[in-house]
Image (cartoon, rainbow, N blue to C red):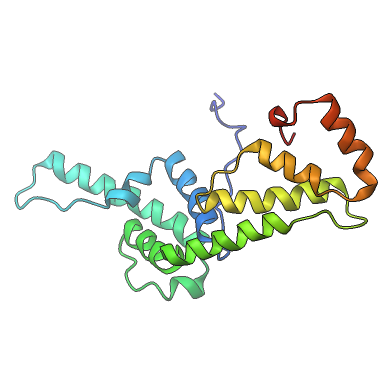
Length: 188
């Protein structure tokens, strides 16, 4: 008998590349899909002084799940970074250490957001750049802003793209603006 999910490709373990927020989002999703996320959030509860056999079994099961969650974390983090994490006893310990080291303070996040806002404001299409590349550059900045907590309305993105394209696209921009309500257009 073939297993129902046999054709489902296993997701790749996301590698930490220095961009904590992106890695954390992907890693959290992976750990949730494997039903290990509660271990990262809550850790392994300690056993009471005289545990019942049921409590011992639940505790042992959670320890095994924690080992599996740690295995995913170990796969995703380079050895050089893992060596800087002092406490690797549980998945929660590893996660908390990564968050503390790489998430950044509120001031840093605010500064990064200010830089991204500025990049968005001065962004313009380069001569000879393809429309797809320009869209990709624009959406990359917008995605980074959203990761930092900024809400960017789609109509603002559309308006930015239309007003910052090179002159050779003026006729296309005029045509789009005359035939459509720009406030309801999507980037797609």
